[in-house]
Length: 218
Image (cartoon, rainbow, N blue to C red):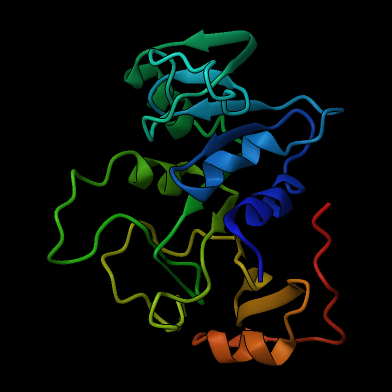
């Protein structure tokens, strides 16, 4: 099974030259560390940063430069800072080519729940609703099962929805899956993980066609 860093490494392979990319809170923030050096990518954070770089080394942090998750970040040459109105103007105008989000649940039809667990205190939905409503290409980075071993890739989400029918691809510690009209199409399996392991961990409809290749991380 993959760790969070390895999930981020695999998702970094989906980032193409010239893309503008929004990174959500959690595992997605790690993706900036693993994008290929030979391509040009602009990472956007909804708190008002365009041109984010990797996380800073210990001792080199600047507390005034943070992402939407309040983590200290670095910026690349030419980076810019702006207010939230302009940031969400970019998002709502569909200027972002790829959005990478975390999730608590994803349904087989592409619904996503990533902002609230009933009965627990939350500050609000934040920018997630704008991101999922505006983005045409959404990849979710998440764990396949919860701490009790129950699937988080479901027939229907049980938590309050953030967006409907919007997720295109999911990368977990077990697999890479594409969401198609019939459900979760298995594209790759993590090293050492069998197709049977993925079947057991997936509640939603899982489509398996032919031999499933092992995921290449590095």
